[in-house]
Image (cartoon, rainbow, N blue to C red; front, side, top):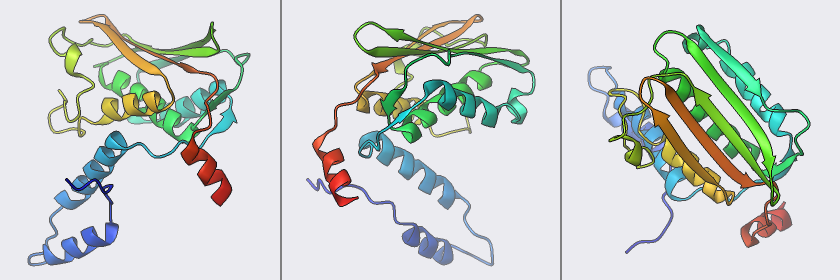
Length: 212
C-alpha cells in the first residue's frame, strides 16, 4: 500500500483544463475537484501546527467582522460574548480561524430568514478553554446528527463538499481538543469545543523551528 502523502499539484489541473477544453468550453468541474481534493488532504493529514500565542477574543472578532457584511448574514444578529479578559491561547490561528468560520457559516445556513448566532467562550479548570457557537436555526434531525462528522456527508444538496465539519473536527483534535454538537429540530444547534490553552511542542514543530 502506497503511504506517500497525497500532493495537490495545480500544474496537473492546469494541464487537465487545457486537454479538456472542447470548442473553447472548459469543464468547470476541475476547480471543484481541486477544492475537494484539498479538503480531503486537510481532513486526512492536517499539517503541522504553526503555533503562536493569540487572543481568542480578537480571533472571534476578526471572523465576525469578515462575515457580518456577507449577504447570508444580512438578517442575522451576531452576538459576541467572548470576554476580552480571557487568557491568550497557544494555537495555530489559521486552523482555529477556519473552524470558527465554518461553524458560523453552517449556523447562518441553518437560519432560513432571520435569527441569532451567539459565540461565547470561557476558561475551564485544568488549563482548558471552551468555545460555544449557538444558533436559532432549524436544527438537525436526530437521525442525521450521528453522521455530521463523516467525510462527504451533507444535507445541502448541490452545495459544499461535506468536508467542513470533518476538517473542523480534525483541526480541533490536532490541538488535543474535542468538538461536540447538540441540536433540537426547530429550536437550533449548539456546538461546543474544548481544547487546551497551551500546546505541547511536538517533534515536527521543533524541526520546523530549526529549519526556520
